[in-house]
Length: 142
Length: 142
DNA sequence: CCTTGACTTAGAGCGCACTCGAACTCGTAA
DNA sequence: TTACGAGTTCGAGTGCGCTCTAAGTCAAGG
View 1 (spheres, chains in turn purple, orange, blue, brown):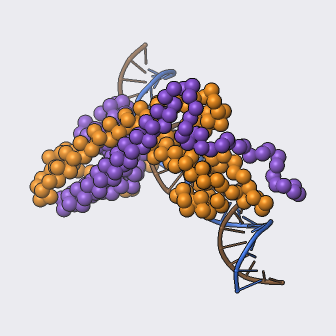
View 2 (cartoon, chains in turn green, blue, red, purple):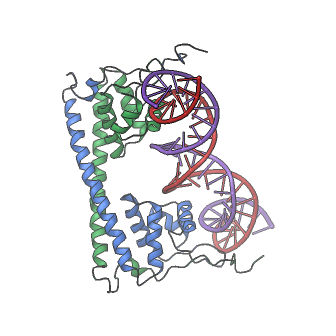
View 3 (tube, chains in turn purple, orange, blue, yellow):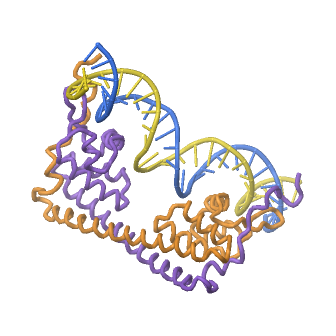
């Protein structure tokens, strides 16, 4: 599989695939006679897994850590597992936080229930917004 | 309340508060005789609300949109509401996505159940990782 | 033979959201 | 009076994760 097809199939751009290889997220790909990257379909599973880590907010530096553990092969399983478990906890915490925000958002939206009614939430508590008075740099200009 | 106290109470840094004012996320604050910002406690509710939007992944440009609608006052309620509802939907979708990823993560971690066992997931499907062969720029170097 | 288009590399540039530094001004306490 | 600490402005710098450009190579089709 050439980089173009992998791009189509993975949803990444060819640019991003090369970038990932450069930083070590993807293994250095085999090249054909004319130096073009030639991928095995198995790379897709790894890219999908990276995508999930990314979706769940793992920074690239941590994915690199995981990738490096994987490189080092057997003997690193416990560490890999620990890394994923820590990440799972942080994702769970984030989901909880998002759900809490959703409740607040529901309340807020509820405040707009009848568009024609006055607000009784945050919007009403701040008297009115002011803009920086243009050209008024200070009381006694110098 | 001076900017330092607001920083302590809001969790933002004074730098960030000034930055938010600069870009229009926070209203231009009243200044005392010596040009120092002097805040009313009501600003805290707004900052907390912004924090929730931020936590839920709303980009600053959208918060600005909301802030501008709020500035324009009555007559913009429907639009504000629509904005929040769209955002709520995107947050819900993201939560669903995260939960789906959590399931995969659980499976993956399950694969490490007994650290001493062989892997039968992604890690096992990629034969082995290769590194860029240093100094090997091409078959026929030039 | 020539064109086309998919690829190659190295490196620059971008958008976001801060974050910090420099140089300065105040008000207060010693 | 002087020193301190907390504030001010403007603008530059940072870290992240891409994203794109330039200039070149190559293989296949017309």
